[in-house]
Image (cartoon, rainbow, N blue to C red; front, side, top):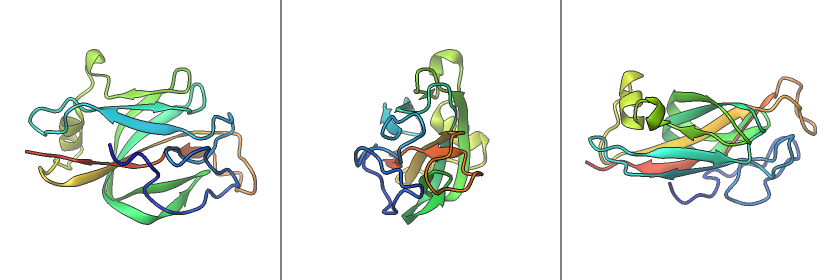
Length: 163
C-alpha cells in the first residue's frame, strides 16, 4: 500500500489530529489514530493481499472499505476523514482484538480481496488502482463533533493491481 500517508487533505473534524501522517484521526482510546497497512501480492489471479490495522479501539467493529476513486480533499466521516470514493464496497467486517484487525483471514476461509470484490459485483481490473480504508466503531465522541459521530477511520492507501 502506498504511500502510507493519509491520501486526502482535510483536517480531522473533532479537533482530534493524528499523531502522524500515516494514521487516521485520533480516537477516544487516545491511540493517536488507527493505521492501515497491507502485505502480499496484488495480482487478481494470484491474490495474497492482506490488510492489517493497528491503533483502533480495543474491540471495535471494523469494516474494510474498497473504493475505485480517491476523494482528494476528503469527506468528514464520523470522527475521521473518508478518502475512499467512487464505487464503494464493504469487503470484510471484523472485530478488533487489541485494537487490530486482519482482513482477509485466509486461514479462516475468507475469500481473497479480488474474489470478495468480484462477489460484491466489482471485479478487480488489472492495471487499475483502488483505494482502501477501514472505518470502525468509536462510541465516545470527541471534541465538537455531533453525538451521531460514533465511528472513525484509518488513513487511506492505494493498491495498484497487475495482470
